[in-house]
Image 1 (cartoon, rainbow, N blue to C red):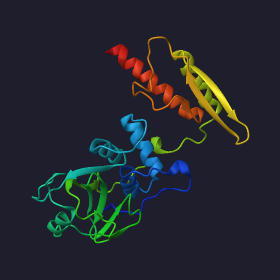
Image 2: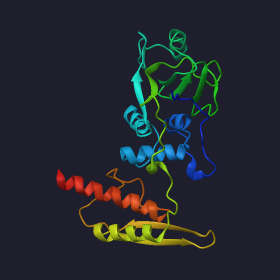
Image 3: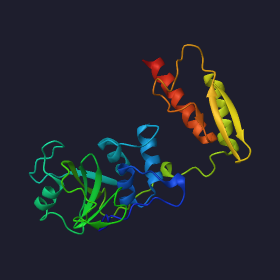
Length: 248
């Protein structure tokens, strides 16, 4: 029977592979994908522009997409971020249930972390450490606990294609798609060249009168992008916002 096993957090080898937040870290430590891929998966599934703090639903959806399910586990202990059991208390109270074959996903101190037997990993430790390691915040209050299990006994962890980095963010096809979307939305794309550094920046402007500022509205984070693929993401967010506004 296939079993889950915690791994060190994988930050990959390039800047694009890295997300420093704990949600992406626990997905990485179970699936083996980079934290950048984990963040990309969460963005695609939830529609958020950036992955920082992550909700239970976002993490559950990411794990489900990888063929992993949640099962709530309290073992009769109070789980609450203000007066619930501490992580040390939960570890002590769950000692009969924890072993080397069971993986628990815990929220304590607003922080996602994984425990398997007496082994622990999170975005802070990065590597697998003992549950008694000084980096483990044992006095933090536990608010949620889940056991992670494969959805089928003989199943394998899946790495969804949507989590993988596009091969070429500045391909001709991507640029063409960006220009089509911009024309459809009445948005202008101005390219600023940094010849000494070999870089380009793509500025978006010329919104139709009455649309308002999409940054102020919270639809997008900035008015610029550093690649055609980012331009597509921004324009698609604007298009989705306009479609929702029309439907409403």
